[in-house]
Image (cartoon, rainbow, N blue to C red):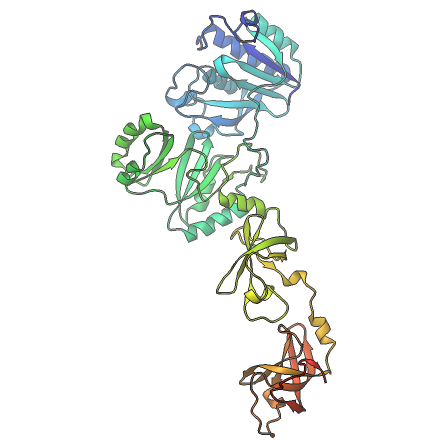
Length: 504
């Protein structure tokens, strides 16, 4: 916040009532003459005192809405001669010389539909407010400019702050930047959806639409206005008649349509303009309707373009989508982090889904336990709270694999210490190349393989699942998680009592 802020007006403070309200007869509209010129000379004087020769445009707004005064907007919003490249040159962060800044102030005083904050970071600000109230901030007292402003017939008053200082919509919101992860996610989305559209908002109420394909993403990216807000939409264009039928009885809507040449245009309208825009759609190939009210129609995900050095300096925020909230949460995670969550689903194909702070992570079968099990429900149950380790954070696919076994003690080193022991255990499986025998007295005990060559076939006995075999632990391969057993001559068949998996 700058230490010196002045409210500069054409209104004499003597004409205010006890509550500070102006009660004089001065009209709020611009005189387009001496008073307007006085305002511009005052801004120039303060800029000169501060040592400023250029200003940055911040949070630009254009559109068919009267922002501050009483005058109707006009074509071009007062920008046509200031930005030869078109309205997209009027973007956040654009640096303009003082002369252009003064013309922008003139446009805002006349209320032609364009508005912005003009700032030199940490040194100077110019904000145009309601009824031609001008707020000028500086890091210097600007005594010469104050005297000049009074001599011009204006009334500068020291105030604590400009009421038009920027304040974020949600101070706690973490804005998603259009960084490498965003573009990778966009490529993934274009491959996943039949049609994808990018909405580029370079100023409030001003946007451009682009149909994306795998071949044109980088071309579109290179043509975006700096610091633009980006929104990725699935195919929202439909039959024109269907789009018209989707218009509500009232409300603020954005109408998007595509002409026969593939050019996409949009216009924000309210119910008073529905009839006019409907006639405009007659030659369109397709059209769509997007509600302008928060929370109603949301894109797939959004972002704001950072500057060329990767730093996000644009201060405005996009309305977060569920994907944006997931992104913000994923940014708090890291590989190896231990999290707590609740099991929400156990699928038929074995993946277990866990809610961790509103995001659904997954546990694949091998990561559920070090020990053998038949089905994931043998290890976890829906509604159970579990603690797991984050194996990876996939910002593109928006996936987080977890591991339960990573937070458990690995029992395999202890099993390896049992090499040479002779135990009695039940046969759990019979395969063409041998039989598996459980060597621990527990349902999830480890199993080892007795190869066919190790079986005593001379006895003529037929081995069945459940038979108890006396085996010797020959090798424990911790890397491959395999146990090799040797069958001893002693054998217990189908025991009715006694313990299994004990030492012989």
